[in-house]
Image (tube, rainbow over all chains, first blue to last red; front, side, top):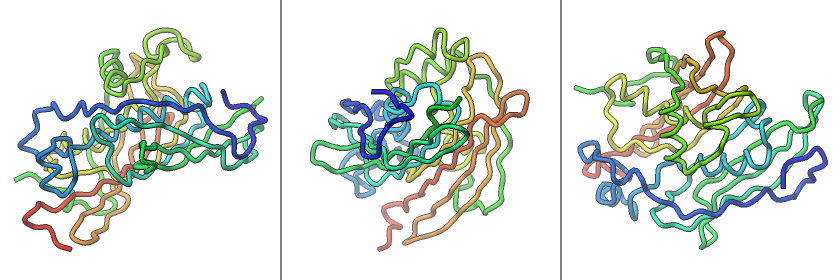
Length: 136
Length: 143
């Protein structure tokens, strides 16, 4: 479902489900203590190497572009915190929900809570995103 | 000896970077992010192909590497992006980098960079802030 000027607070954004792949783990950066590498991450106290945060941003952007369309490129705002790592082979869902409607520039800025959710219900990445819909 | 982010202060800038939004860069970024949007290679609402909206998300990495900073144990902890227009494939963009926040908590260095990317006419296309933490080396870790 795409964003419309009539979108109501509480309505859900189209969900995206992916299986995370730690593509950076294969990068040869051992000398840099690469956090995408299992052994380095474990020395720093983490369970395993991290999936790159850029991949998480990419998945969230896919969902947001699917919802907002071209307006996201021109009026989009996005902020998030990385509270915990996403790991290789994690099954994740990218989700969002309209939190607020704000009149702006002749349209309505839809402010949404957005997050990545693991199968255990934890949210390693969460924040807000918005764009203006219904501009003349 | 390479600098670390602990050497940076609020207000510091790193040299401005001019880059071409090449089809190759766009293809690599789209593949890395598993993002097959047809706008990246064909027609888009703006005419020709455009880059993934998060193309410049790794600027902290790019700028620190270009300036010989030590990259060990750097972890992103948060981002804030504002988008004002697409980055057309084939265009040239200019990006500035400024340190806007810095703090230390429990032996961990936090730094926030602001990156502003403009097109050839000087119009701002993307403004984003990235906060990263430099984790202490395991033998230096304190609680």
